[in-house]
Amino acid sequence: MSTKSLGDPFSSKTDLRHGADCGCHTCKTVTPDVDDKIDLSTSEGMLERAVESAIVRSVFGQSDLGRRSFMGMMGGSTMAAALASVFPLNEAKAAILDNLGPPEKTDLNIGFVPITCATPIIMAQPLGFYERYGLNAQVIKTAGWAVARDKSLNGEYDASHMLTPMPLAMTLGAGSVAEPYIMPAVENINGQAIVLSNEHLDKRDPKQWKGFTFGVPFEYSMHNFLLRYYVAEFGLDPDVDIQIRVVPPPEMVANLRAGNLDGYLSPDPFNQRAVYEGIGFLHILTKDIWEGHPCCAFAAPLSFATELPNT
Image (cartoon, rainbow, N blue to C red; front, side):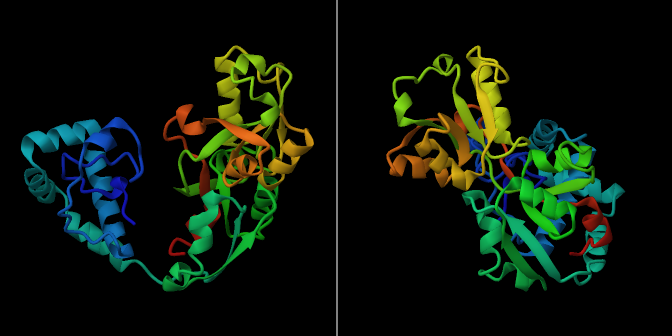
């Protein structure tokens, strides 16, 4: 699947900063070019476009608005010809493609936590995506984020489904030993919600939440950060006025039912599960707190990327 970040860099209509499902004003009002000469359904086409985009972006100092303004005034063909006269663009793309070899490591263990965000990692196996690229990948169900982190750090997982703050936290050694990690892909944006127990149907104003206990999936999670930001906007100190506990997502509904939690900020399917079982309601979607916020990620050690670049 192509994304707008792999759109034609010589077009004034494409926004290279955003994904295909971005809900920002630009992406809602601008229609990208459909006459693309590069086939983005292939890995070679995606790599060719990535090289092309990287070079064009560097010319404009990573200013996408500047790039689009220039393309609109001068035309993409003019820019392409000018760039080709001073930089061997086609030769650079060909050289990178020629240097691609087979994967250095084919047997891989990839961890995932069973939530909706893990769908790309999970479904890539039965759909044959791993096999298509010569990989024998085993996707392994993991109980929670701390387990995913620990199994990654001790080498049981070659790569793993993680929360977007986790690779940075692991690199810094926050909550674990320090090991440099990279995040090749964001698995999804938005998609979370604050759920409250039905006992609090009359407490829609967060100012009334003083003394509440909330669950979040992990300390180093967008869920934790968004919850803290949200209650602070209504005058509550998240470290004093409420309690925030780390609860694995599959256990959140049971804890809400048992009264151990007044609410939680969680991924699906556990938000809809609380509604379906009649024990909770959706207070707010996280996209209404921060539109386009990152959530889950696909992460791997930096050493994996440097030592096994083709994999």
